[in-house]
Length: 574
Image (cartoon, rainbow, N blue to C red; front, side):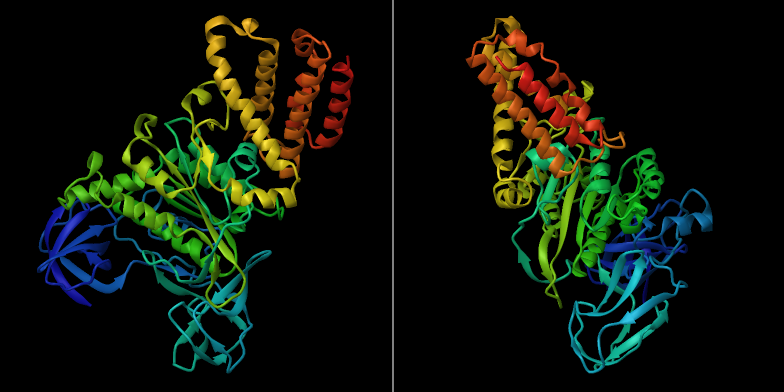
């Protein structure tokens, strides 16, 4: 290991002399061995971004170059863990130092003492390559952790054995002398290689009606949730983490307020997984980097999260990554860029902001991983927190250029207590056409027609509202008054959803379809009744439509919908 000395310090950015590192090598800075990463090399000066608070360190203190980039440890024991931005387990750090992280503290990402029951599936003499599965460990009940050959290795299995091992024990060898262990390391800034990227064909089912019905996200797709403060970004992200049908969830709290992250950290361990009935944390990895933690580690936290997600994808799992929020990540880049005295781009962000965002979102996808025929996917959902809700700012615009789903949160809807406060006129999904055959085949043949019908009514309502504000709804023709009534039913019954109600928090596709179908049938029956001479005030007085909202809060919704359908037919019969 090379040794040098500190030459200059500017917050988390320090300059060292006397070492000859490569870009992104990890260095140990000062007498306290603070962890840092090389971000610039100028002649004999090395500029290092330190992941911890640098107050108190001074020029002349030692700097050691480890010669390796920032890596994460990938192996059994990650699921259920809570890490900081550079994969230090927070529960372990709490035992060492209490509630606040002190400087220069190190803890491995995996538990080195715990023994795992390893079952070898590769045979002696078998040819293996990067991504090949050599064995399995049951990490949590029902979740099989596949032990993979690191992507940069290949050869024949010289020896391998089953039994109980720690992550550092040698479980086998390749004929080239490489020792196989339950874990391997991978640099966070390098995307893990795959055999082939596939076209997205199936939706990520979220259990949230507005997402599943109007703006679906494909498995392996990317979505952005921009919205102002208080519009419900974090609750929306948490709902997606709790209920989406991904096998593994990686939740990155990047620069969020401490109380919001505390809520996640205390709530998630108590949640029950709707699929297995076991704790949701069994298939979740949490990465917490709050706004009062060092800025540089925030920049690394996103890469740590996506590398862990890719590792589980390589086992053939479907992974959903929630990044909350990429704006705080971009702010960390801006702060470091200004300390490096780089030429600022728009609004002070570095000129490479768009490139970095694109590189991050590009790591999503539905793929055939190395060494297997079974597909895996990483879906990325990034929250954006534009100042004052202005999405014309650079982070939002750069994000929208690379994402295909845009779920726009609206502060006016949030003020009216309409949650999730997704603006149905400004939001969009470019996956709709790709996913249309899946919905027709797996849910209902007329699903896509119903969605089109509902969107048309909501767009019509928007045009009519301007007239209503001028002259009142009574001045509208009766047909248009009926359109307003149907649109109100869509908004209140279909689009509104209570995240804190034990039944309404999750809505399966069959129930979403039944609600859409019932509203559509009511609209058709009401229009037919008007053709036969019924007046709009009589339709407004019908009782069945007012009970539609009850459907959201009952388990046996089919029975209630049948009863309401009969009642509607009776009331609208002329």
